[in-house]
Image (tube, rainbow, N blue to C red; front, side, top):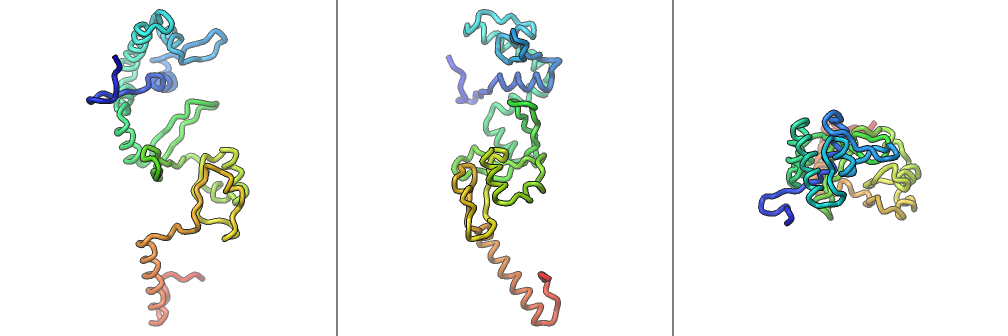
Amino acid sequence: MFLTNTNGNARADILNLMRAATTLHPSVIRPGVEIDGRFSHRLGALAAANGIAPGKVHDAEADVDAMLGLCRLVREGAPELWSTFLRFSSKASVVDFVRDEDAFAYFDFFGSPRIMHVLTRVGTSPNDANAHYCLDLSCDIDALRKLDDAALAEALKAKRIAGAGLDVFEGEPKLNPDYAKLTNVVLTPHIGSASRATRMTMCRTAAANMTAVLEGRNPPNPVN
């Protein structure tokens, strides 16, 4: 029998809960330790490190008992984390959170050092409503602004920058050929202002400046 996300049920990854618990609440859940001394989130190692008899390896009933035991430790020792875990077992709740919060933290568990990213949502993929584009607020925005086309293309190629959407380029209408070889960049032909509302505002602004000059007043938007 499988519990699915139908009929009001939900599902979530206990492994991610354990990763969060060992990182944020190490006094509640201790990571497992392998023979070579490495920390581990393997179920048997986790259970043994936290005083739960792991039972037979890969035995379905024993694995469920071990997971329940670990979950009870989190529920009792870190109730806020447990409440958050239950809340985000619903995909709709995750989407609402990402959409409605001005900023939120995302923990990158893999790699070293492990990093907490402070993100803000900037948009949604036109091809996948579940894919949300976010800006890492901890990055140096000024440093990104100073990158020329060659440096940006190299950073995208090396995946130091995950992706980019570009509308303006050096030496237009020429295009740095390296951009065309990348799959993590979206290019548009300098049409960022091409919306009805923006173009109407541009027309009104130009008209207001011309009217001011003809009437002997200072234009509201001088360029000098």
